[in-house]
Image (cartoon, rainbow, N blue to C red; front, top):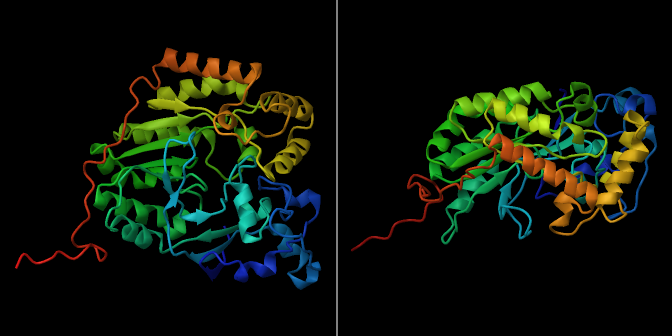
Length: 382
């Protein structure tokens, strides 16, 4: 991976301006090793702007799509949500964008907030937040903080390749372990096993659970659908290693894509259970905003023989549209096809004993360490 550091403050797009007109290269090269084949700017927040190619860089560099990392210095790190169909109300993200390049990723449209493309920019122009652990510690020390599990891996994978260099996820886990704060981790990466030392200590106190996403067991499909995520076999290995260390692991068999990977649902659950997964969940493909176009283009490139069939079933589950944004139905769809997937999932979980004893993480160990630089000063009794 070739990474170049840049920086900007408080999520400003100023330092990213030179890349707002990222050119589209030759089609033969633009999807090699990446999930998206497109790099169009979103029209939701600004009008597309194009710059002559020679004003940005030469053709050879443009078509390579090297990973570039910008340093972001945000003022806060905790993100709150009130979505009724999401089982957490707060999350932290060490990075923006994700080099895994999963073409279906529902978080891709967030790159448009930076004036960047939800396409290739999302997986090649990333931001890292090196002050994330410090901001997290500061947030946990605030008077009146109400402790509840924090979710990691909600908008970007905390163990994507650049974590090897920046180690921001590990730094935040160290803070959470010191504070006795519960956390859930969702990832597609075998890299999570690097932190087994911390994860096992937290699991002993019922402070942690890990969710490993396994979309397919087909290595060839995974290489195009989620090209830089860990191979399916490595994810199963991660489940095994974490489970052997006493860490509760769940498998996310998601997203289920009709006529593409949905036939693998039971097999994914079976192999994950054999590896040590205790629980499971599954959602159907979501195509919000620009993801619709990106996924349709992926089908045209990688599965042209079944593109029409896939989208027919997707629309059948989404009320005749490519996407349904409504709470509740957006995760599982509606109609006969969606109901069949739900029934298959429930039957497989019952047969395997998955989700039999769903664990609830504890908050009883939370305490602000007195050696924290943000700990409230104790008042004298005299």
